[in-house]
Length: 436
Image (cartoon, rainbow, N blue to C red; front, side):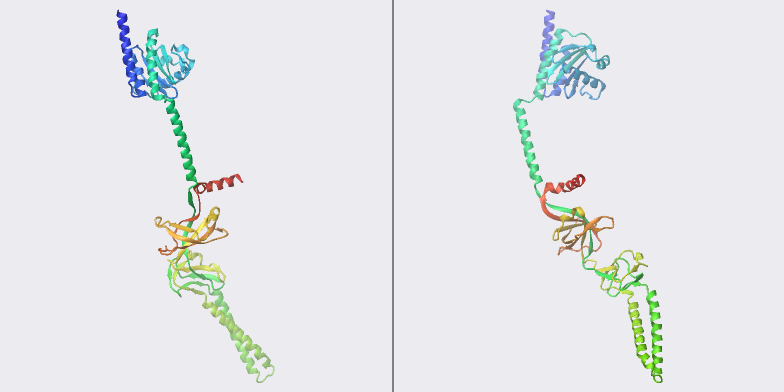
């Protein structure tokens, strides 16, 4: 009667634990009940629930197992080795490879029960005493309930699988169509180029004659008025030539007067008078021309504006020739945009295209302009690169930025698909690298 009473009690406890498993709200609760509450049925020291691909899910006596703990890492290796066993089995260290069996005594008691649950899951119970058939039967029954309950949460129905595949397929199709439509979305092609504000109608100040710059009278960006001296050429050479010409003129005039007086008494002197008169006039004209050249060595401003030049000290002592540009005189507010377009982007800019300049000093106030000209051949820039010069006039009804401001210009081109706008430069780079 005592045996029957004990058996009835264990069956009642089994039903109670099974009920807890069946009423569990999630897989974590099922695992916790399976490794902890089963101790009321069969005494054991340790229990583990393991899932293939997910590792150890629950350990008896722990609320949350640490996946990086040495015991769990070893247990994970043991479970992977035993995963090929589809039936319940009682095991000892002798059933494991030497590399795993060597640590058995450190982590587990001598006897282990392996209970496969299906879908790559298993329950492992470890005890000090050997497993009896009745204990194995009770835990196997509990394992069946745990496996069926876990399947509820981890195994979708065939209908759900089909719907998920259909939904995923439709999502991929919609995504592909959306990406294709987006890649063909028309956008305005544009290129960027460094730019600055330059004079629109400058007055070019050139050297009036060959010489050497002696002095600069103005500073860069200094306001000047019409007629104000800008620079002087060295007068040493002209002054010397003028002194010699004046001496030669005086000598020629003296010879002419002497011959004019002598012709009264000497008929041969009449022939020399005309020659000496012409020579005197020639020397007088040469001296007068040198005087006019000497007056031109001081160059004056042709109009009002500001002086545009580099460092004045760089010009002192520099030889110049007739017509060589020395500086500009420009209206500070009469400006236009000059941009330098790289050789790779030259084909994207055409006369009449829209240009938007974002000044470094006013990035939130773009300047609107229209491309007036694009240089056919590239020019060398100070940074040793080649670029095409682009000139653009400002659109009316806006304040013109002052001379010298710098920024970045965006030049709009033709309408192109978005995919071309995104991948044009990478494709060009790949083509140049590959060579075809």
